[in-house]
Length: 105
Length: 106
Image (cartoon, rainbow over all chains, first blue to last red; front, side):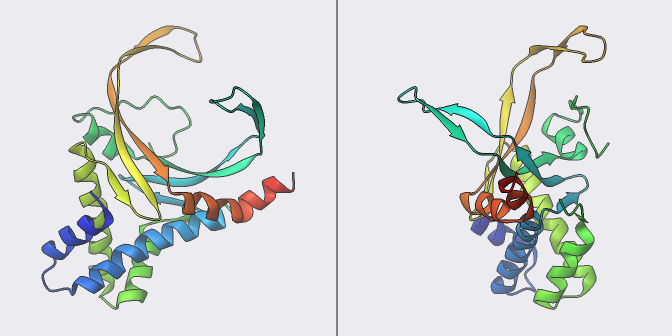
């Protein structure tokens, strides 16, 4: 499913809305999440999942083609963890999570 | 990190401000977006949101895990896990933000 397919599906479910409004709704949602992460905020959508920013330590990496070592700087990375309800739906109703630093359950 | 948490309330408020639907309808639309994405993912589809990132489902086979507290070996059952791959744009924005800048300055 692409963003435009998502928009088409929502337009179908909401025949009273203009397509361009549905487009704005979808874009607004993802823009807000991206803006929040850019500020370093966390976005928690219970049942669906949570977006956060994780710090990745500097490390020594390797160029897989040449085998040469390269220094990789510390960086911030967007992270998403599926919520309990979505995890259960993906696994036929069973919550398979065994991550101890879970903040949703 | 600023430590603020954004929830459905702020996202549907943004939709309300942007599009001029009622607050209720804005909240419903947000829910529909999450619902449509979930349904696609449960079907095993990848959800690609350009300039944001893609969500996909990966099958993981059974493996042996360990209870970190007791050291006991326990089988981890096969499962489907959700993987989010942020777009280059989102990665760049996060690194230009306060968390990334803080890391840069050591």
